[in-house]
Length: 341
Ligand code: KG4
Ligand code: ZN
Image 1 (cartoon, helix red, strand yellow):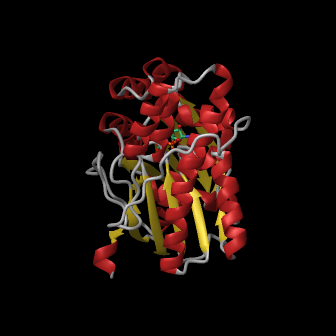
Image 2: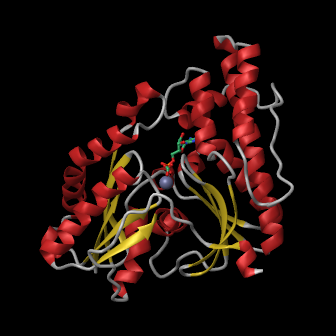
Image 3: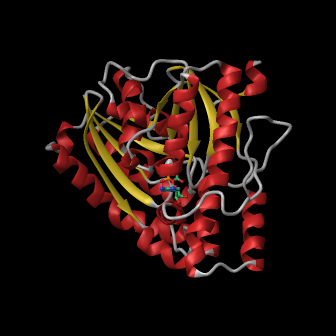
């Protein structure tokens, strides 16, 4: 079965092809150059860029896989959450192809894509065994989820305010490092001392697995205002900011591992491309006997291969969401913890 995946939830236009669940091609067109001057994603510009690039990206994925549209057996598209204007571009193209070709179409939750991305690096018949804990950390989301069985997720906690990627991006903006800020901080931090400055780590008492990054953002902003760093001090600031954010993620993850007894941890989403986070999670896993799985960086950030993979089993089972499928800007993921207690 050949599945075409389409992803356009934020600022990456992406398409991918899976052949019987195995990755055949993945193409991502990034809009960083367009949003860079604004220091963040401008939704209306994002939608227009998707319109300009989505067809070329789909053509690129098909030709890279060596297949034609005629060979495609089903389409998987991100239906949410995300910027609604951006989502609608991918969804409209997917519906157009499905209608014209009489193909089944399934809508995929973006976070399920991130949860499953790691399976793209494993043999098709050996996905990560359930149950596993998933930490999803990106520019739009930060949460801890328990995958109990295929398609069965529990939301243990998520951010109460900003996503951790947003904290990376905003701090980078304050430091004049450009957008997206995560990779810039990651790079600069390699030459800095993570213990140079002690930034506060937010801990929530209620909603134990919930995360919060907006207070941290303000604390760094105030610190930078009161102690404007010189060029030479920037690596220390970057390393210290990164260490604080990574500490918060590791702490919440350790608590969730204790609580659930999960023996496997998947870390995914754009921020999981962060070198220090990968190092610290690997060390934590080795110490606790937990298997830590992190996809290669290109599969951590937004891509359509993960969307195609999440849709593939449903398409193979004969599911079809049909042309009534809607884009949804805010779409919860996983059953709430209280409902499963
Ligand atoms: O998953 P993603 O591509 O898009 C969303 O769904 O949001 O994540 C993008 C986020 C941005 O905030 C970016 O700064 C962050 O991931 N990011 C990183 C790194 N690479 C990307 N953050 C820290 N270190 C990195 N190396
Ligand atoms: Zn994402």
